[in-house]
Length: 459
Length: 102
Image (tube, helix red, strand yellow):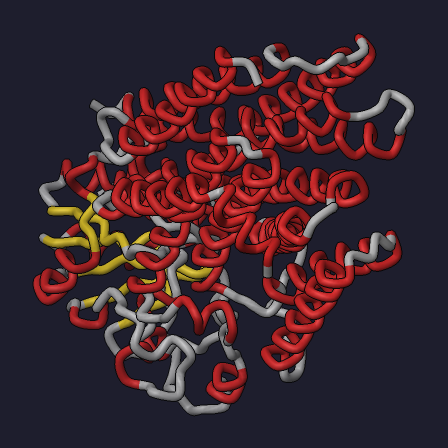
């Protein structure tokens, strides 16, 4: 490797660290992203041109075509996709990175698995890459609705764990025996891919952000492993940065949901209680109309809006901003209560509301807003379910028991906008809807809020 | 065993780098406000596309007649650059929205 290339890799590595640091502050985040992107570009160009290999022209042409195709596709996808689809997009791109690591492993296994250490790095790269790839694709499919429901496999924890152990045993055998058998290699590949599917498929609702973050972190680890294989510092450090940062982010999210990382990985959400819960008599549902809700809000002095995934699905972020502005004009104090895992990604609601220009200071995080629900006249819950479910406080049999939630039930009136009475993404019944203070405003979030806005305008 | 010992003595710097980078990653993320979690995750996702460097190396080392390796390497480059370009572009778009508010 030329000295120049080593220096370029060093510079790229430094830009990654600076980029990540700057991404952590709202004012510098944009620069941070650009700096890291610049470093990445430098590393890529350097890798292609600064080496001491004899490479035929056709290979350069192929690399150029591949980069062109990938760049154009990546650019088009990222520019075209709506902001509400962000979580699944991150998941999709992440899957591509995993697939790339997996393919590299496949090529290298036949060429370079000469000693145990090389074989170990290659085989673990293949497994982690495959799990990330198929897992991310399933997560993407689940988020965009291709796989609608939570798939229940009987005893899936045991099956998953046994299956994973099987894959590991196969991997260890391949490494230890030094057998370069393509049948075993593809068996290992299939095992990794299948495990990724089995791993993500039973996970539902509130655990989804954690899974995406975890898969993200795994791609980093796969990149780092590939870096060890090539003795390549920029891949090693870049991968480890993403890996460790991703794990920390995952743990922060788990804390927000009062779950441990291990319980997410080895014991994904059990939905059995939830199904039984439906049979419980919870009382009656009171439904309301847009005009009644408008009147209630018109005469309120404190309104708190609780946005959830339903807001994102219905693309209602602009209407809700309009509603909020209208209320403020009428002298109502309006705040948004942001649960850390509302939506399908941490900070999902912040991004969404930022898109519609909602003032930053109106978004209040859970710990700060919870004491304020006592003073709220009306709480408007838009498309949120699990994050306002009182079962988290008072039903030890509920799968979300112990998760910190927004204490909306302390408010004087609660209006819940929901498409229907179907249980939330996690499949858990919500007794908030049966509370005597709650009225249900059924309908698509965008339609319901638009009706609400026009009623308010006429008052 | 000998191989392991040999590997460790040859690669001790790698162990240092691994451990120290882990700490850097942890320290950088620890105190980030929840608002920025999504862009951060997206940015970190773009960085994991650094695996493309490996994909390019696979292609550079391939024999032009080894069609299997070339095909797999080609796909790996396409997917890797998709991760890089898509990841950074999406992060940029997200952060753009944070900015215009003021």
